[in-house]
Image (tube, rainbow, N blue to C red; front, side, top):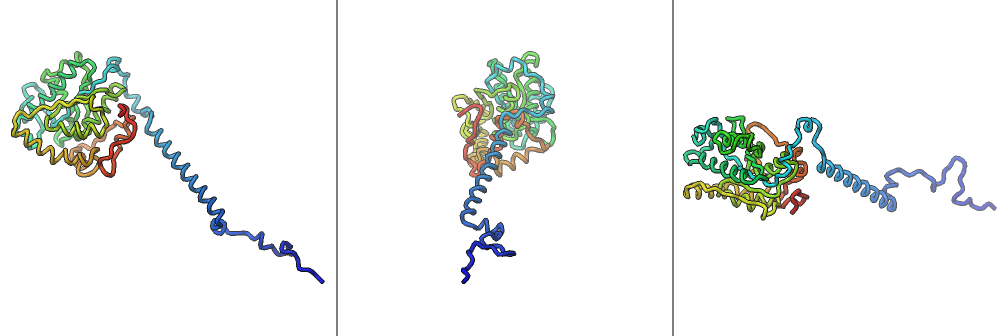
Length: 324
């Protein structure tokens, strides 16, 4: 009597079921192997995420400018190494005159309709003169006239026209005597006046300021102090805003009302100006299709330049050269 063959016995030409090949889907559906595969997948995704963040980190930190930029930059003069005070005069119009007698003639300025017949050229002169006075009295100050190419009728920037105005009228000494002055030609609104002037200071000196003074309209005081300074986390005790009144209380009241409706309120819900309608205002002023180069000139601020919280008000959480 023959006994049945053991289950592991293989007959010629037949393969035992215990050794039958299994398809990949069946293998992946196996509970133990599925767990292992999921773990490997998660590890792979985590590794990719880490590598991506490292790549972005090194892209945004301590990256030297490209050679084509470096080749065009001269050595910084030793005198700028001692500068630590940034004096900003934001531009509000473009002076197209050339002579001192044209300084306060309205037709020598490219003015908005609301600026006409309101003595605005004399107010602009007061801004320029006060900024120059502060910088002249402080040997550690760099004066920056800030303002972009905001008119379709001129290829001159606000900042450059203010500097020409200062030279032509004798507000500033000759360039041979006073060289601690420059322009910032990319900003399209007040927030960028502040942020880009800080970046311009970095381009000129190789470092960041420790003190900032802004000279502008009195009715813009709260916007700079409570919103723009806050958005940049600039220390309050190292920030001074000198507001110059319009000289007429009726004009001052009207300007303050417009400031609240058209600037302060929109910025209070969009601190970085990176949502509509503030982005639309910037684009609407950029008639010459220009873009700033401060990603190269101030590489430490690259993440700040791109910060755009969805809720509009979350303060930039990253590292800043001036600390908290």
